[in-house]
Structures are given as structure tokens and as C-alpha cells.
Amino acid sequence: MKRLDLLFATMPVPGHVVPLLPIARALTARGHGVRWCTGRQFADRITATGAEFVAMNPSIDHQGRNVDELFPERRKLKGVAKLRYDMTAVFLDPVPSQVDDLRRILGGRGADLVLHDTAYVGAVVVEHLGGPRAVSVGVSPMMLPAPDVPPFGPGLKYRRDLVGRVRDRLVRGLLDNVVFKPVLDHRDRVLAGLGLPPEARALATVSPHLHLQNGVAGLEHPRAHMPEQVKFVGALVDSAPSAGLPPWWDRLMSARRPIVHVTQGTIADTDLEQLVLPTIRAFAGTEVSVVASVGGHDLGPLPGNAFVAPFLPYDRLLPITSAMVTNGGFGGVQLALAQGVPLVVAGATEDKPEVASRVERSGAGINLRTATPSGRAVAAAVRKVLGDSSYRTCAEDLAAEYRLLSPGELGADHVERLAGSGATRP
Image (cartoon, rainbow, N blue to C red; front, side, top):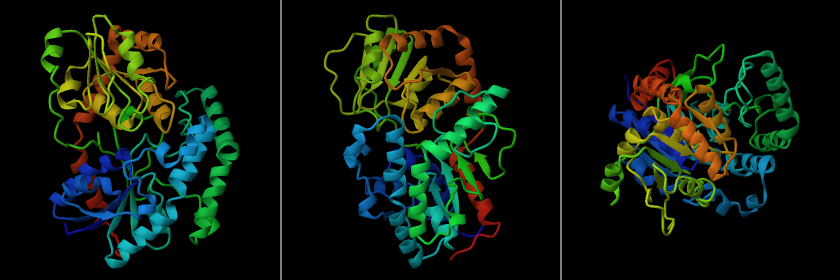
């Protein structure tokens, strides 16, 4: 295989950068050149893969801040209004700067392919304007529409019957023609300003050439036809060094109780009253050990069966976890299911309803359909998962599917295969 010159481009958010790290590491180990344009906070992690870091335009670099810090006005919004705001301000408004970044980088030295997360629209625009072919990496559940799967966004329950098909068709029309019409109009204005003709503005961020999907087919909603370019590559999670063992680890082990892990992820952890604290309180004094990752928060006095740390050694914790309570972050769900851990999912923003819907459909967990469940609801769901072996069985079936795939290497295989089929270097 000839040496490839590859350009990665990702949104400056952990959930959009981390899944591509194993692919970059595998490609550089094979002797290919990888440049990566994203936020400065990821420079060290990117160079550790052997790739060359290229800083994105400072005006679109989040610099480690969460979206509420960047866009304080979104705090006043809820539901659909917040989702519309995010789609325009967070994902569409940066596109002109992304295009400028890619043109600047490619102008100095071309590339065989551009690999991007599915939210980085600039890579798709540059291809339409004559740039290299774009390869998408799915950092959320698969967004590619199909007539036999629910429309992406609201987290509808998967149904195969006629009622489900009719519901999906009606909801799809409502989303396209009413709910997201202002977003689509905004998209058209942004892309018109970049010189795209009307027929090219309905951009699909899932590549028609190659789409590397994080996860396994068993977690996705079944569809009659899976497009040929879609390749499931397993759990795209970074193989970074494990967090050290917290000081309470031996005490946790000696307790010999079922372990329930609860997490709100690394982004949505500003208010632990949403999920972490209700879970800790719900199981206070019970025969269950609750282990929580809490970032920089100080929770004060805790029940004797609660164990918290800023970060946790997932490689040691998940194999002994009986159930995981999560807000539906896609990376954490991948980690848990790859270890056969059944889930209780409570998420209502971004792609989290879609993650929860897929967990529910797979049989590997329970969907609470809210981001702020009561402690009683969490406890009831956890006890159901612990008491019904079917949830563990379904999770272990998915884990067996994950074990068949080597994500970074498999992703690199597919990239090499595509590049060998006639990639160009503008």
C-alpha cells in the first residue's frame, strides 16, 4: 500500500475527537501521514497517536468550555427550541470557518482523503467544491435515514408494524416541514454563501464513499437495506492509560455487593442532581454499592455504600459492574456494552434519546425517557435490570459482537481500501 496523506477534521468536543483516535493511531503505525485539525485542548492526545496537530480557527475552538459557557442564551431554552438553537449555532454557523481551515491546510499540501466526524459539515462542503473525498465517522447512533427506521432525533421507540411505519412517516414529515424548517432554511443560507448551488445544499454528512460507524450492528435499529459504504467497526474508544485506583478500591472489593455505576459523562456533569445524586440517595443503606464518576465536584458526606472519584479505572470497574446508570453518552454506552454490562439510560438532549432508544430495542437495558428521573424511578429500573437475567444476556450478546471487531485496525483497513480505489489529491 502506498503511503497516504490523510487529513482528519473534527468538532472540538471530546465525544467527536476521541472516537477517531484509534483510527489515527492505526494509520500512523502503518506509515501513513495524518494531519488533524481540531481544538487546541486535544493537541497532546492527537500527537500521541503519531499524527500532526493543526489548530483550528480560534473563533470556532471551544477551548474546553461547555456549550452553555459558549452560548449562555441557550440556557433559557428547552426541548425543541434548544435543539434548533444547537443545530444552527453549534453545528451550522462554524461551517464557513471550517471550510476556510480546510482550504488553508489543503492549499499547502493536498490529501488523499479527509476523515471527519458526522457533525463537521465543512469537510462535506469542501468535497462538493472540488476537494478530496470525505470519509465520515459516526460518533452517535447512525443518522442515515431509511423508511423502516424511526426518524433521527426524538428517540422514538422502534416498531416494525404498520402503526410504527405510519407514525414514522408522519413524524418525519413534521420534523422536516415544521420543526426543523428554520434550521434547514438557515443551512441553505450558510451553504449559498459558500457557493453551493440549490441542488447541492441538502448535504448528507454520512459519506457516500465510506462511513465508519462506531458500535456494532446489533445495537442499531434493524433495516432492510444497509448501504454498502456503512462499516461497523466496534467500540471506537481511546486506549488511553487507565485512571489510577481510587483509595477506596479495596473497601469496594471487600464489600462483595452488586456494583451499580452511575455517570453523567464528561460534558453534562455540571448538575449532578440530574442523575448521580438521585441514584446515590436511592440506594443509600441498601445491599448495593454505588460507584460514581463526579469530575471536579465535591459531594460532601456520602452514604457508606457510595464510592466516588473524579475519574474511574473503567478497565477494572466495568468487568465487575452489575448495572450502569447513564445519561446516554454514546462513548460510555459503547464501553459498557463491550463488557456486557446492562444499562439504565436517562437522557433527553443531543443524541441521547436515540442512544436510549437503541439500548431499549436491543434488550440490553431500560429507557427512562427523561434526563431527570426520580431516585425511585432509577432504583426501580436498576432492580428490574438486576432481577431479570434477560438484560444481562442481551448485553453479553452484544459484547460478543464487539469482541469480533478491532476498531482502529478495521477502520484503517477500510480507509486503505477506499484510497486504493482511486482517491485524488487536489
